[in-house]
Image 1 (cartoon, one colour):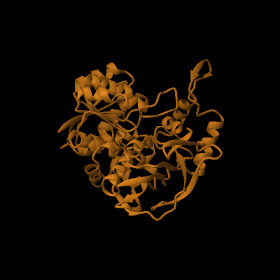
Image 2 (cartoon, one colour):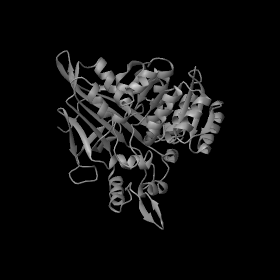
Image 3 (cartoon, helix red, strand yellow):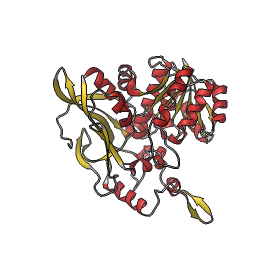
Image 4 (cartoon, one colour):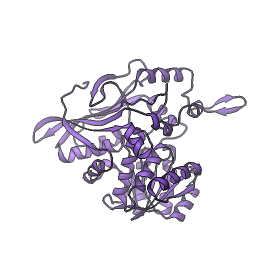
Length: 405
């Protein structure tokens, strides 16, 4: 039985707190905190009505370490689950160190004024957490998160060495809007407009961003979803997997985008709406991307009319007992079923469920160590079992498809 503080009341936060509330035998007390307490209260009221469980809510500015420490000292959690913005990872980690609390998040840190994300800032906390006897687990959503766990499980059970990994993320759903993002628009657009990188033969290779001429893409035939155009994209889990997967020569990340999405995003970029530097407007400074975020649908509101499925997984090419083979491990998640259970679309669901499972692994002592860890460094077996039990069943099959060389 444990106490968990969840910071962030967006679409993923809603899923995490509801999935935790479904397991009062593990999560004895839950506090949901956000800069806007009213959002937390709405979720808490829904949980009370649906599950008969009372959770605590609080207001906190996750940019301010003293406020975070005050809340942690008052609630005394065993674990802080960070599903706030990636800009706030370091302040929340600093607060955890000061208050003496374990930490878990879903996305790596990036500076607010620079569209660049990497793990180095958080990896630099290794000795601080180790010295305090605290554990920090990084990137425990789906990708990063479950995809890393798939890799760790494949390395443990299927291969002696893995030569190549292709991570394939398909959202074959329809939310009915001309243009919307499935998670925070600011974070999403910053991510997909960056220069692409993939790992090959010991170095990072750069290719054009998905909106640029010369971007790399191909058609992949996904289970259930069928053929979808899939674009090479840089994603953070690759940075840690190249350190922790034996014999890895190449790793790539692919994500599906529809042509209408690409067209909308190209127009927005061309007119300057994706910029993150301030511009003068009617006597004050505004950041175009933040203004665009205010105009777009809230990702947390998309679930009610969302149909279709997500298909996310990893294709492995490696050797076992001297023989080469290719395997595909993947999950299929249905938007409608996700909404029926936790009133969220599948992109939030596939991130929130693994976050709850990671929290469960930590508070139950299945994952227990001092320092900063990416999830593939931890034993994957109990996590893989929990995915099947708590809403994200996976399959492993021989892969017979075609991938670009």
